[in-house]
Amino acid sequence: MPDALLEASLVSVAYGKVRAVQEVSLRVAPGTVVSVIGANGAGKTTLLCALMGLLPCTGGVRYAGEDVRELTTERRVARGLSLVAERRELFGSMSVHDNLLLGAFHRRRDPATHADLEAVFERFPRLRERHRQQASTLSGGERQMLALGRALMARPRLLMLDEPSLGLAPLIVHEIFRIVRELKDNGVSILLVEQNARAALQIADYGYVLETGAMALEGPARELEHDPRVVETYLGLGGKEDRERRTRGHGGVDRAGS
Amino acid sequence: MSFDIALFLTQDGLTNGAIYALMALALVLVFAVTRVIFVPQGEFLAYGALTLASLEAGKLPGTIWLLLALGILAFLFDLPGLLRQRRARAALQSATWNLAVPLLIAALVYVMATEQTARPVQIALTCALVVPLGPLLYRVAYQPIADAPVLVLLIVSVALHFALSGLGLLLFGAEGVRTAPFSDASFTAGALVVSGQSLWVYACSVVLMALLYLFFDRTLYGKALRATAVNRIGARLSGISTVFAGRASFLLAASIGVFSGVLIAPITTIYYDTGFLVGLKGFVGAIIGGLISYPLAAAGALLVGLLESFASFYASAFKEVIVFTLIIPVLLWLSLRTHHDEEEE
Image 1 (cartoon, rainbow over the protein chains, first blue to last red):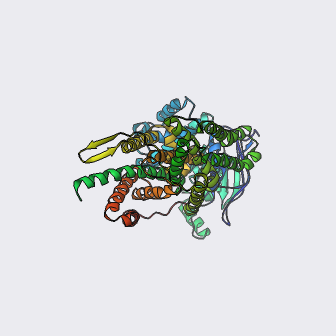
Image 2: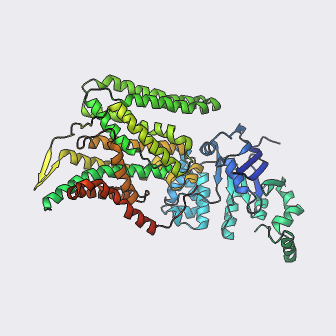
Image 3: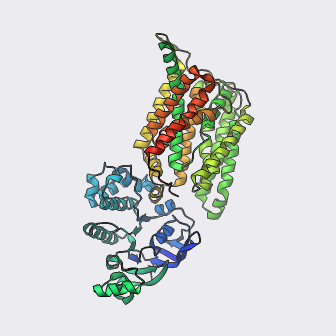
């Protein structure tokens, strides 16, 4: 196996006494898309925040051969690690243009940022149309595009996406996944966290299943797609009766990924 | 009250109000970026005025020792991290900014203090001595607890205020100072006499505010500070370091404070503890702006200046009481107008 770009080993995160993520290990090989699927509250966002340095964690986090656990979030961004957070975390009262510009803050002396800004506008024409508007006035899909664009301005080598499809219309979700595929073709490695398991596994090379804070399953995405446990719980391929039976089986909690 | 008196009071109120407005802007800036209510903001005004007065008198200002001591302290704070990380560049940076630069400034002041120097040189030396105290204080007092709740940060601010005001007494003594005015000119318009120094205060405040506006609106660094104020997590994800933002905002706040001190020292007698009251009046102005809006904070501070001026005419014994009572209706109004959203923590 080639050297991993990102390697987490036995990472645990606790909120007070509650352990939200327990001894999770994962690796992202260069140039691949890795998906982490799991139900709401499985600890997916917590895991990403820990990898990004927004939350303290125990265990090892290596990025590009370097132990990054001591590094601040900002330093990790400068190293080429970017996160598009679930809540987008935009600068609401600032213009779309300024939001994008600030994405390249760590390479502010690099003259290529202007070309990159142009490339982002090229990729998201909607953002160009609205570049003077305040970020808070954008629609949900535009916000996601802005968050993606801002992350791209940092020129990431590894882009982590937290629920990029959450709350978006199918057409926009399709568009977002198309862009993820494009980025992969451009050599950007991607760690994708999704409840939309079907789309996430389709696009991925490798997949992990996170359940109540621990890794339940892992494997090449093609295999996971057909793994009965994944099909059963996350893909919901079975008919309607099947789903109802499963719902009862889980004590009334429908865990089928929606 | 005759029209002339009203005019005079207005002019007096606006002069003080301009200084309060600068204080208010600094307070809003520091709070927005770091969530620190910077109680010692006024101390920078006092230190600026007192340092300038020392230089004017050809004495060595006590601030020189404070700068060196804080620099060494900040370096010691950096040391454990530097030893752990073993990065030569970081070590060099820390040594440069905490040890070499203060030492250089101190040496420069040491040599120039007893010389007869021109006014602008004295002001430049004052800035060089006092402004670095801002980022150094941030490093020592706030950076280690940057994620603490607002209340903890406020308590640290109060402690810092007492420490700085005590140090002010130690370094400068108890006597008040008044520096020479920038210009002796005065202008007469009807019954109103406007001193040249008041005009300096107006002009400099307006220029400083315009510069601040341009900084926040046009430069990437200014935008980065605004971004940190708007969304701390978003800023970190964009690679804007909270440490950088904190130091930059304290640098700006200290600059504004020192500059205000230099402006007001020829008009008012400044004692080692004068800064606190001035800062507090700026704070009332900032509260009127809800601690978020720069224009409202500046307007509020002007209002405080005017109110104080008229209050001192009608009921001089209650001047401060009237000014600080203003905060109650303002808080009531703010609490009725805004939805109470719990602070993110």
